[in-house]
Image 1 (spheres, rainbow, N blue to C red):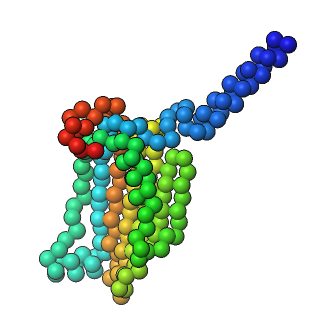
Image 2: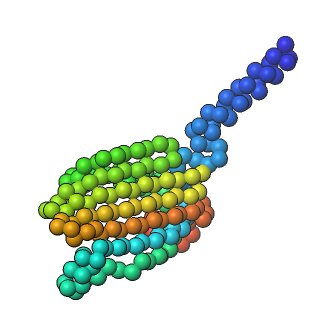
Length: 173
């Protein structure tokens, strides 16, 4: 009888652990932790030769690739707002793919304007409550063989501390 109770007890513990892992309570959380985060963003924009020449003739140019890092104090409400925003599709656009699960959200949408088509793909991915990645690509295609302008952005964020320090007091939330 003791052996049967021990086996049942171990079985219940294993089931509880599997449920906890499925819910994200083990090996991290299902949402990033509130607190101080550091984010590094890389951006790059490219254009077809024809569009590059057209922009130069108008006194405009494609900016150089850039990288910047910042620290932010993030709370649960901000996290939920970020997840909601990633899935927003502008009213003039049509979603062609929306995907969500316990650790990521992504959307692809297309916007048709006056003779241009813009396709946007964005994915927000988080792991273990202490890391977030966001990728964003926008491709605008122009008529008459002019080509494309492509904007890429990727952001990797990592949890620093539960304490936001001076950022919490400065209102940078």
